[in-house]
Image (cartoon, rainbow over all chains, first blue to last red; front, side):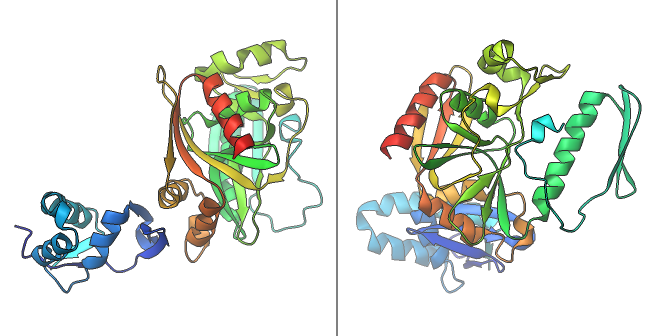
Length: 90
Length: 253
């Protein structure tokens, strides 16, 4: 389960912030990623200081109208970012 | 070869030698080449050799630049602004560029654009257009009506001088006004989607040829480009409809 995982940022990324959306570049891997505002927000919260559950609680409290959607989408997003090597778990 | 590269400025260059090609031809179907003493290819037909050489020369020239970002893109100018059609081979950018040139826009390139680290304009590499067999239905009528003879290859592609489509002008540089990521899709209606600056930057970075030459992989300069011009993702099959949309958008902003 992902809920107790503490995701953190992978080193080596350069970031360009354009209107709240991010483009992440990892020069050593020659890889580029695009994140919309939701992805960018989640990515920033995954700083190694909180579990996925805590991130869900934070976001649900900030956006109560979208709480159900957040609980459905954010774990999948975190999972995808870990898979892509943008975040690391634990 | 000189005819097809006549707009490219090769004169008065006193820079460092980037590559030294040696080409030998036993016959028209038996051409070999080496570069800097290493074999590049051997015993190819004239047309295959020409295509290989052009590709290799372009790659070496583009990969060497440390003062400009080089992107896979076609480009034209219209009403004082520049249009960038960004995409890799097969995206339909060359066909679209040929048609846009034929409809009155000024041609800059159908292959690569160069964006200096310092400066707001971009320039093209205006060699002849390389038109593939798959898009022959678009360009055939100009090639057949042309007074001069384009370079035709046995695989059905041609190298056509841009003046064949528009005798007016070939431009050297322009200010970005519109950035489009085109995709030709047979049978699809025109779909145009405005994309965010970050999405455009992401797309642009994937078409950057010489990223490794820059400490930040060119991202800050590329970010400046996407903030200069609105960006769109375009899927098209009817080239006339696509052209009409582009020209209207270029004119009205």
